[in-house]
Image 1: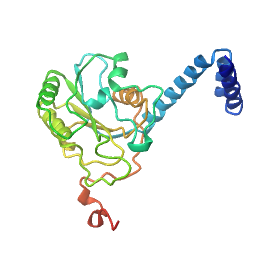
Image 2: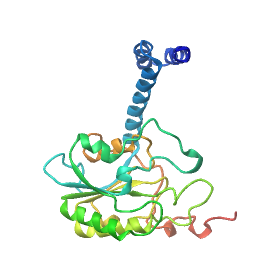
Image 3: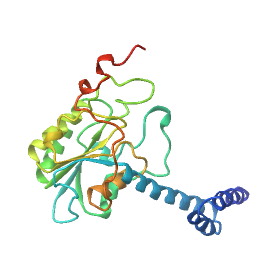
Image 4: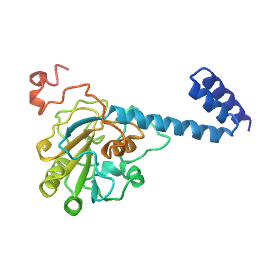
Length: 254
């Protein structure tokens, strides 16, 4: 009880020193217990994270496939990152979020989808059973959305990347699915540019980057037209590492 009272005093001071929305929240919040107050603050923060993520993601390609229909079509979500999104960087950037919203969770409020894992993130090795399951799910659907990108294994602090490729198992998955499903969209989770050898095989590419704890909700909102894809690239994405001016001097002289 004593700790809760002290927390309320600190929160009250914070809210009194900020904008009108925060003051309104403070008025509501200080009438509640400290845990209830904290939950409300965290939920508002999660909503802000969702909005920031949606405004940061970049639509790289759309050949009439987006926005996805909310009914009348069978949609398959494919890829480990649909269920467990990579939403933050590696190493010491890791934090424990209040909660994490995946695309697979968020889409339940809009429509039903089928799901297949497709690949493993712990090693770059094609799992034939997961690949076959994903290809079959794509075949049976009208639209396939593949959630792919770079796992921690491929980029983190403390070392340089030696190439710009995504895991081979993911590139193979995307190509195999594109062969059986012409209506394919790829959603990318990565902290830096990647080569996309399958770019001409798919109809849509959404660059989500590493967009925080509400990334999955933001992705779903953009895929289904609930939010407008208004993000702009802050960097050039070359087709290949060799197209980059620094290629001849990569990785430099120590």
